[in-house]
Image 1 (cartoon, rainbow, N blue to C red):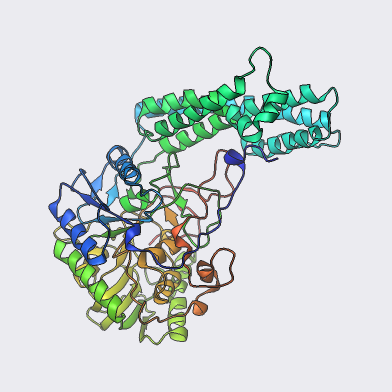
Image 2 (cartoon, rainbow, N blue to C red):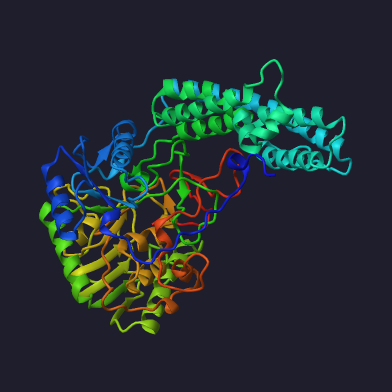
Length: 591
């Protein structure tokens, strides 16, 4: 028997294969009611892509590039969740599309004085629970030693060891009791239930033991209906807890939740909650992309002072998690450009995207044109040259590769269907002409701080103004490890199998961070004329096309997550770094 599986056991979800790419009826269109162009763009897109009626939610939010964390928490998350639930779409919609007028960025937040006080109280309470839980786990190990002298506990260690230790000890007791029907059976069985209840609450007792077991072991003549009553009470408590978690932004709701959980979910449940609330309240003032945060719509308390590994990434292997939403954006400096992006994507999809692939690398040098002694820039530049190798070996696309430290000269490349390169921060240099439906990704910091400022110099605005239908960028300093690797994103797209949103989210490393992708989420520029076969892809990408339990097929697995953040005792399955700090080690360069 496995105890406390929900709270402490790592459980990797199997990838959910799909026989087709993302579909129109799997979209939710999100607009801003304070900007009439927002709804117009969404209506045009819905008609063009045959998105079913009743899939547009218009929010009353600021008509700015940025909104506050408080506004996002109170006015966006509850409204989107409520809309999906009330329309029966919570298990249907896989991708949320934000439109012209929806803010790009969520402003950074630092704990207020009241929040700092609350965090102090949470820390104190968590420390007290660690002491109580540690003592109770030791009692469980003592009981295991009593029923089986061969049992060897693992005394010591922090709270991350409590779950495995409790599982091992109480599992040993269960195994022993299965063979024992003597005089010691009843007192030991009742002690087992007491320890289970203390550590994980009566909810865990009811999950682990059948009604017949509880009648035989735990019912007393003084209260013969205790467990029947508790089952009803806990069912009600689960609903209360879910409702309170929906109000994570409300200090009163957080406090009520802390008072409610211990009674029904034990020390482990309380520790899990306390740690989650503390992570939620810990912020250092770094902003995040609206779309990138919205991907975690269904997550309640999760770390907000760091980037999180993206559970949809093809290399992710972590703990079980709520679903992750793919998000995309249809936005541009002008409303007319959004309409043109939609039209050119449809045209290119119908005819097949033709043209050159332009790759602007640096030859492995640093951004100043000198030798990259630390190696972070040259390591990322290798992804560009590796992409060029894949294009030459596996496609018929004409390739223009520049490996000089300088950028493509202005207006030097014609008929560009695909482009990627770097650097030149917020200093767009028009290097050529795009084919209708072109996908253009420039890797540099701050390129999506704004799309709408009158003289915006960022690459996202510049590329869209000059005819690109797809781009991506960061709303603040993201560091290089936030960008999809070019030799993963583009090859996936070139197979013609995944939709744009799926190719992006399969290769995006992080969530709750800085990146946003702009373009039609359903766009498949190479559906009619694939430039690359699945067998041409790097081995690590081919797994995305293997359906569950199968050895082949064309399914794309991106529609469902394969894991999520660590739970209360977690640590090894997460790779978190503070916002604004290198999240994956000192070797990581920032663009």
